[in-house]
Image 1 (tube, rainbow, N blue to C red):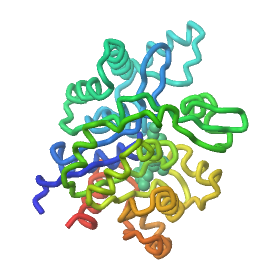
Image 2 (image 1 turned 180 degrees about the horizontal axis):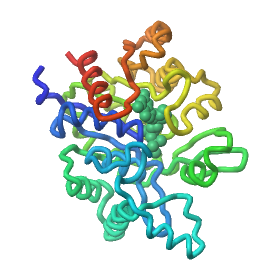
Image 3 (image 1 turned 90 degrees about the vertical axis):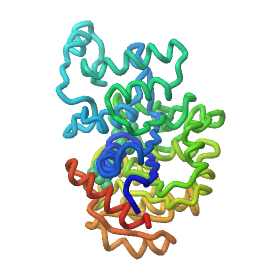
Length: 319
Ligand code: GDP
Ligand code: CA
């Protein structure tokens, strides 16, 4: 199949998702790729509307990200943060000067009544990416983590509590009345070549997307192969609390554990699963779940690895 005719939908959270999405973008171009992005970690801070996963993705696609750090912009400076600190503000949630520009414009647009989709498209165009970046919804959905210390909003759990409290339960405030982004529903009404669930945290990056009323049915009905990539490699998360959350959910911290999470929560959704070559011993267990499992090099240490993984996945699963 000619590469330019491919139509791919990628479901992504922040860092892990942005890495694979960047590889897909580099390999197949913006006209082939639409990214549906988690917005359940969005929050307000110092009066600003912050969308961490949208920003991680847009910065990665546009070559603006700080790859080593995994969040924020490259060539960042911290003048505003220092000045806030001088005023006694708790600045553990670090906002760089260049990053602030994004939050200021987004906040202003939302206050003027624009949708999150509209302002995202505008910022993304200005960052010179031609890939469609869709917030999962324009409605307000927020991840709430139930812990022994009470219910914590995601950023509260992640930044102020450093993911320390035990996750007893997760729910998504606002979900029942949220609508998936109409643009993704429209996209799904036409045949796609592949739906790729990026190696993002299943609990707090992918779950909120899949819980949007009607989305999973639309993904299943599209008929394209739905392929998830494991964010757990060799029994660990490359970043963030995914491994800790799996333990607290009493699941094996492994690629097979991730595959089990998907098949139990959403039977029949996935057709394929990509695990890392280091975990090839788990291949049969994952196949036994009814998935076509393929072991690939999934650790994306730079742009070349991102692109390789993207082309390998498409070569394996798209005919
Ligand atoms: P967040 O919203 O910034 O936490 O990002 P995501 O949910 O998109 O990604 C977090 C997950 O990405 C973690 O569980 C990591 O293990 C995974 N991850 C990050 N980089 C890579 C990578 O290069 N390969 C794979 N397989 N997983 C990765
Ligand atoms: Ca996130």
